[in-house]
Length: 458
Image (cartoon, rainbow, N blue to C red; front, side, top):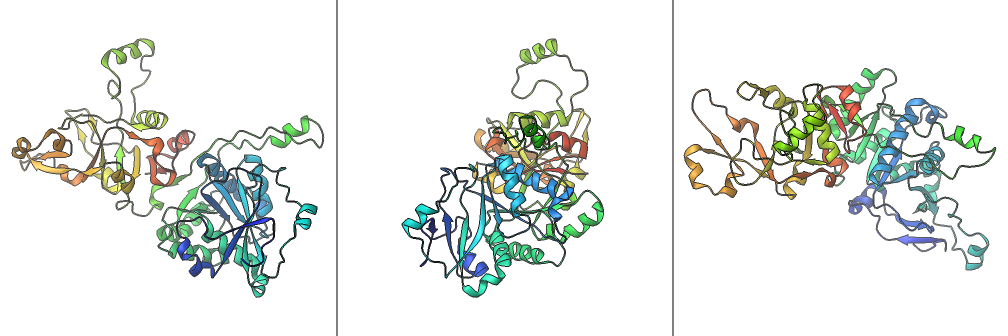
């Protein structure tokens, strides 16, 4: 960058994994970050973008709820917010970031004719960022003089391609933002599952969902707000009680709530995710001895028969899926997964009378196949009973005996995978898992404890 103000630091390569496509998407561009006193900046940025059909559209309930849920997600995941300056909603995004303690950067333009500031000029007009601890320094792009008139569209384009993840608060069919969204989803270098589209729920929900299906088919993630409690609502009230014109130093505590969406809106997961279904508890937990189980019953007898939902709750709270030996050969405890579309898997389930339970229940978690493979997951090898003696105990941990006898269960249709040892859920990123339950009420009940989106599978 030839003419860079002394208050800025040039960066040669924008920190997204698909930097190589930026010249194609943005044209030849150079970037600079305004110097800031903030010591830490997040490694991932969630871009906020929105259509704005009417003046002050950001003031409406649906828009505010969507923004609030996006910032709570960023707060929980440790992401920063990237928003284009000059947009009608930029100020409200920045204001909410400050209130919710979410780091942010504003995206702006620096025309090529700007001159370099001298040291004396910098001393006279220093950049004062100490007043805002969440300002990570503005990102500015160098552009040609003739592009300045179109700066808003340039900044929207930059937001779409410079964000690790993108959240579309509102989308007008056929509008400018819709065209930019189509461009992002068409770039194969940008991973699927990194673009979130808010789906309106306040009115005309069926119509809004129907219009969103096309975007979901292209790879966008549908974001269905369930309007969690908003900790910021009483902030102004609390500040006023402390004295007129005085700003509170204590910001509200933020609780992250993950999005809930109908499973039918999610395009096929069979190539990307493996499914683990939970079952209802019938005795001790897998990590509980029989004496410990009896002690538990003495202290707190069951008021109702345990359910698969209770098992899922415990799993999410403990942040692990416990490996077991149950009904499996081999010397190592494993966790099982199915390589099946969830709807197909649930349609296959049968009640096993000798076990007094179903094969699997519509409760559980889907985890990204590549993540599981990188942690040791392998496909199960289906073998005849006669081949068991030829296998080592280690090999048998990844084997399932099948029989051609009449009436025998054909386990091959499950297309099973296994992983040795417990699956530590706290290591799984937000975009690499989906929790599923059969009802909306159960999904909402899981929001405070789930680290991933929750799908309603019926």
